Length: 306
Length: 117
Length: 127
Ligand code: HEM
Ligand code: SF4
Ligand code: SF4
Ligand code: FES
Image (cartoon, rainbow over all chains, first blue to last red; front, side, top):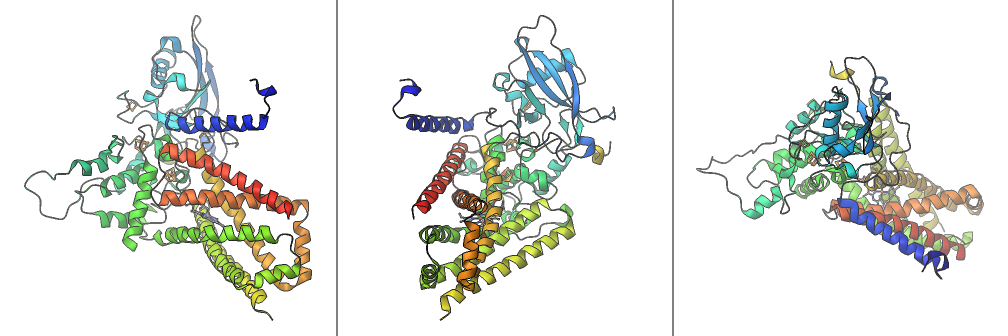
């Protein structure tokens, strides 16, 4: 029956609303699609330092005869030019391109503008190099399909990091934060004759039954770069990637330094700046759950106090 | 600040924020339901309600939990966004003082209504 | 180049609003709104303690359009913060971290707090 002649339009509308909501919830495990709002309603250069304000760049037109043209707006920064960052628009013939966003970047670099700079290595989602902000949320360029992106698609480097060139951020500070949680096995007892064994259940705490435990983290820093709390207090808050790894060692039955590790974490900033926003879990391209790991650390600390 | 090491605290504030939150669930529900019942009361009826022992005790408990929870929460927000040391310390102190003042005034007013002859 | 001179990549300006961040900032905003509400609660108690005249003055103030709008905002703020606070407490107990659960509980909180606000106002207009 057409909606206009329905005897109960309000009910139909409510049903429709409910169905939409259910679809939204169902799709929450998939790669994020552009929904209601593309950006928060703030000016594009809001609160950015003078040298970081983004300017309009140039448009690279598609070659004549291109079959399926798609536009990509890409953040550019050239340290040698002395100029501010800019947004260049590339018209790419995706008809003659591989299926992933990384394929587009490689195509641009080899056919349109060879100065476009980005990190990549494995092109199969395991090295963590190609993490960037695609259509407003962080993901690996090599596991993000072109078909799933917006028109035009926007590509920025990982958020709130010093930019070396184009899509390449300086990760020094994030690696230092990772080092701070001392990501190695610490023991006190005598060194055993042979390997330190774990039961399958104990190993599951690290690898996850579904392969999505903390040990599956590829340190791409999509999560930390997408965490608002890390934007505002990144100098002191360790961020989800480092904290997920802290949990990885706390959860390891072979490690004997849990108390010492918790001491180092128990701090209003290092750990407790996490406000369970859960942008981290939403964005992790490996489907891991840093938010849950941080919750587990907080629980451990609460436990040892009582 | 990284090289200053871990403060080895922060758990208490976190825990008390949760505990006061748990206490506030029934207390705010009670407050909302009571205010709904009493919006249209005249002054005398309202005072009669506030003088019942249950209302007086719950109101005092609510004020204590509320002001504690509020102070912890507002301080977290200041720590997040205000990074000038002096301004931050001033704001944090102000929140503490105002929250205590608010609790004292509120509890005093409740008891005055409840206990005056 | 020294690191201090490198431009900072944008964050809030370009990060896509999603349920997780929007609900979190709303929890914060409602927390601040409720803090102002706590001020009002104490003012209300104090005026009740001060006598019928003071109480009547505050009551008149709250009956203005501005007063009623503020009350409507506070009602929603209370119910939202309460429902989402319970959602937070579940997380703190280690539950509800799956992405689907996060989204399902999030929409439930939005729906419930709007419904509770509506119910409260319908009931209060009946008495
Ligand atoms: C009615 C008066 C209340 C006031 C004035 C109030 C105020 C606040 C404030 C200012 C914050 C800080 C927000 C932030 O850090 O972003 C906060 C956080 C919080 N509130 Fe309330 N609140 C109230 C009631 C409640 C209730 C009834 C609950 C119970 C479920 C609750 C649960 C929480 C939780 C769990 C947090 C921490 C969230 C986080 O870690 O970010 N609050 N509250
Ligand atoms: S948790 Fe996920 S998003 Fe974060 S660094 Fe590891 S793999 Fe990347
Ligand atoms: S849950 Fe914690 S770590 Fe993850 S995005 Fe939120 S504040 Fe950041
Ligand atoms: S290239 Fe290795 S993760 Fe994308």
